[in-house]
Image: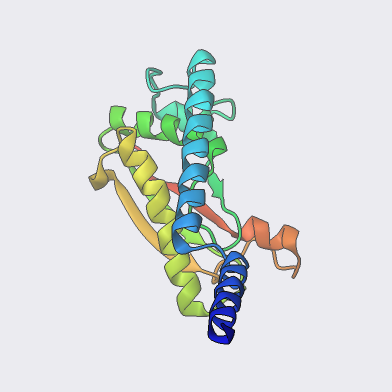
Length: 184
């Protein structure tokens, strides 16, 4: 009887401890998948709104549009969250406009320069800047830009635009810059 009591007590303790365990990797993956799905849905809604405003894929852009401050092509910065490389949905209409320009102007070349804030090792930041630029490249490719038109480079933490050591400055440094190399 005493052994049966100990066995039951051990089962209760194990059950209680397993209830306190941290979320499993599957739960974390499911949460990330749900976040991505919500972001994709929001991006679709924003894309439809942008197309209604005339910023979508069907718009014709010429080289002069690159210099027009009213054009969506005038926007050439994509900012990222700390230690993240996912493109936020708010940048989708702008990136779709750049993809449309590139698909209509086969001679145009775009350099995607990935940057990070100063936190982290030099090697890690170079890799993170590369991942950020590759994320922007994927969005552009999916929206019609040719891979031959795109070049990816990472500067990591080496080229900050803000030098203070606070969240506002770090947020400005976590970016991908879109730099047109030629306008043929």
